[in-house]
Image 1 (cartoon, helix red, strand yellow):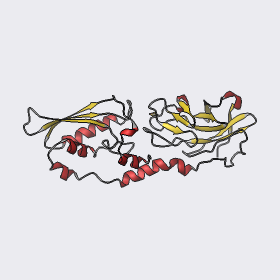
Image 2 (tube, rainbow, N blue to C red):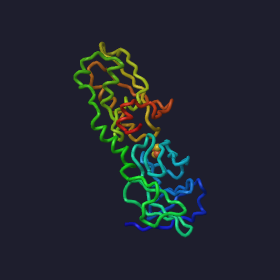
Image 3 (spheres, rainbow, N blue to C red):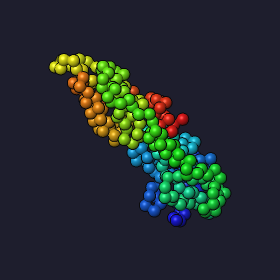
Image 4 (cartoon, rainbow, N blue to C red):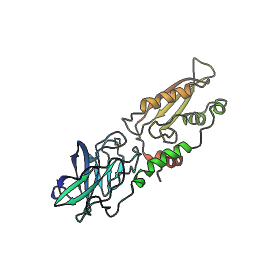
Length: 264
Ligand code: FES
């Protein structure tokens, strides 16, 4: 098991405040709030953003890159686009110093105050690791249990309209979140127009947004959208237009998507 290491003097970090330290070659964000100390990996689980550079409000740190929020007490992801917890570490205060012991996996660590318990003892307010990881795990499980989209065959026989397009697009799922792009609220618009060069077929234009401007899944989502719609015999061409205004926000998700992600 890793040993506690002194990373800072108590007097170096205001309350509320935060600092960035290095422990065994890993960057750790240390937080001091209401007399308590917390430590998280300096890594946002959405796309690696540096949490120590984010805005600290009470017990929440916001990733400076795309705004995902984490609970500094447990590492739990509180808002999209992050859905997995970041790793939290044990902290104690001793001899005027702040000491950290790295944990091996994402989980909840209790706070350390100025009368911290001895190393290894459970601190007041400790949150079980299982609680910190539950939302993401629940999200994955419920994603697997989500109702299947209507069979492609039944949709294929229906005349093309916006509702059918949206149903077809439920086949396209975000590869990180395992939720379809319609329920995520990524489809801003569907425009159908008769194809001039293909009688009886239609040109489909999709206005799509991303959960963040640098979403790594973007190319895949665009490609899958063109693939599932382009497979229909009544579609002549598929155009995907990326729209970032208005920006995507979690309240665009359907109740189904929230359930799948364990967001309440
Ligand atoms: S990297 Fe943190 S929200 Fe995207």
